[in-house]
Amino acid sequence: MLGEMGIASINRPVIGLLLALATMGCGAASSTKPIKVDEFITQIDRLNGQTVSVTGYIPECQVYSCGLYRNKAESDEVDRAMSAIHAALAEGATDVSGFPFPNHPAISIGTGSRFSFFDLRASFYANSYVVITGKASNHCLSEGRFCFDRAEDLDPIAIRSASPPS
Image (tube, rainbow, N blue to C red):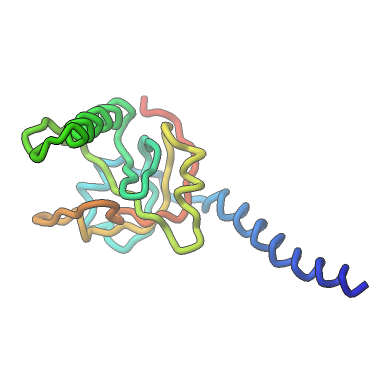
């Protein structure tokens, strides 16, 4: 009998955690219409610190990179440029500064809160159009600043699917 009670008491927190994760995966509904990537960028100083919803195309998130683009074509062009740079570096190139790189508007999506498992949730939406709700930050998008790796232009709270732009 004691063994059964021990198992039940262990299962309760596990079930609670799974239910919490399932609820978080649904995402929060936003009462405002999502804005586009380029609108987010041009309004970043006004939006700083606010919770907003942004719509765009999300490729697969990586450890040091998770971008939101205006559309699939721009995301693909950036991927091709990065692949060429990585290939050149693998072949021993020491300077890739002359490689052409597209200058498309993109938002860097952060990793989210400690237990949000954003990258896991985003993996279900990889290579598709989404709406990401999160807290805007102008830390890296303000004029005169540039951040490397995975900046948090948008610290994600929720993600859901969206229709491609028309």
